Length: 190
Image 1 (cartoon, rainbow, N blue to C red):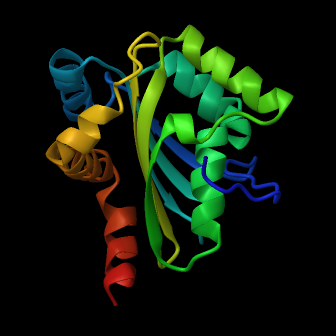
Image 2 (image 1 turned 30 degrees about the vertical axis):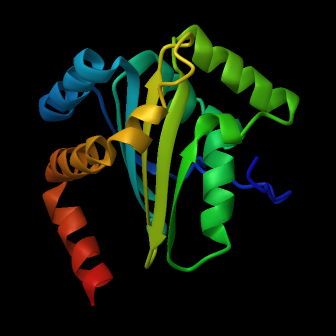
């Protein structure tokens, strides 16, 4: 199990400027998900790009109903997976981490409720990635079937699946907001 921090972290607050996308509003990202669904049995895919300075968040999710709860109802603030990753990233200026979801078990009633709800959408046994650099945080996570306890091993055995997906989602989701994000990327590279 990964060390957790007792600090209460708020990932999405009332002031967040949310830009939310689904398979219908970002067709290219949807195509990436459908390919993963066919090839490795992926049941869920989420990509989030955040400008921590402006509180803008660009979120693609393959499941609108779950995204509405996770992001819209702010259950993300009680998700043990996001909390583990983001607390780790908070302690560092520039960092990234990969995490099989089983390494981040729920420790509170709220976290157990989030995990229970997530599994009702057949999202489980996943693998996630988080990175933070120069005021930008990026997340990519893949969920598998609740009965597929080895789903996360797809990414250990074939890391190109992860890197290809990150590149495609980053490109397609961020293309939806070129102007805003172009200035962010320029600042990051300076």
